[in-house]
Length: 167
Image (cartoon, rainbow, N blue to C red; front, top):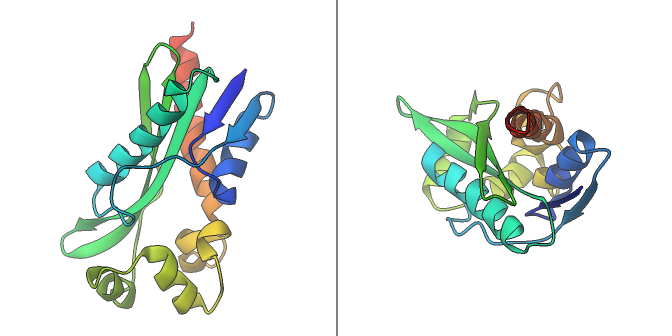
């Protein structure tokens, strides 16, 4: 089966390849059509669905998958959030979300000035390309959970829902 992932970010691509290990997975950069830094569950989910739909619309795959990371507010605190969407060739849309952890005030303050989480994480961790490796989740869980694993969980939820409907 041919599966497209709507991103070239290695953590997202590897998550899909691990879950769809027996399938032909290809990555392609597509637009999320939301802000570069989504600021709510709704906006983050919308970005994931847009990416999945864009992949599915290419008619070159059976499944299109979109994964999107963002932040969302709960009682004045910002939490890391992530959403995924799977769209099949019948245009059915499957959605799933994963891990959430609070972000430190200094990250929140940087986000409020319009900076993106990836940029802030590079400065915070004094590393380059944190979003392509461990991600904010990896930094703030001391490496216990990394970004690829977080997205793998979301992709498993998507695949499981889709497989259930194939019965």
